[in-house]
Image 1: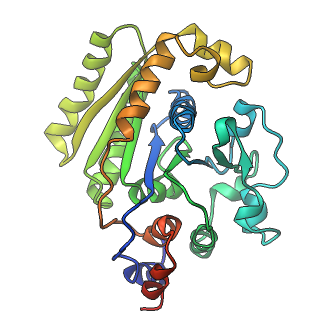
Image 2 (image 1 turned 90 degrees about the vertical axis):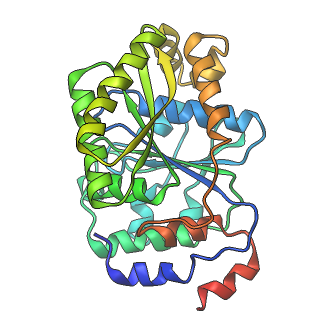
Length: 295
């Protein structure tokens, strides 16, 4: 857990006078292989094509792959920030349609086992950003690590991607259970991915809903059913996002609809969770907010 000093720092940031706020969406999935990174990049690309200022954080700190999926050349990444070699702003790279990417490291076990002080350092790094951002999309690692939980409880919206596999459903349930019982996150947006029909996607959602309604105090909302589409695999081979490579494909149309829907999700005036310092400092675009930092 992040120590209480970070929570104390956050207490002075709860009141924001700035009327324009960044929408922070964490995309996760409980297990690997459910397609959450493709969903994240699809949403980001769709939003960026509409002129939104989009930033994507590759929060899979040990097995980062967003830069590879986009065919981007990356010099430094989050591991260099954590080592004090550079600032966070120095590692940001530009992706399709002007979106900004914060790359993580790949194949570095230490990045998956951050200490409390390193967690705090990462939060402070984000607090130093001075970026105008409409939407921040956080693509987490698989599983229920501390970093997955931290970024999930920091976001205004948590999108959980599931596919029709028993392990996907059970792992998604485990993540929802942990976030709702121990971290106060009670609302979840569900994306059923790689399904053969809307009916199949809805039935998959109902499987998850039945068990959560029985045992948890959690509210689930089905926000998209993304079909199994060969064009997604072809786009990945081309190191492109399907909404760009094959914009009229069934998967691209579904992801575009999801992105448009996400842009309408309200941003609460008061954010909750121990990562308010990270989130709210990222959102502040007004020098007047400095008054709150000194409280």
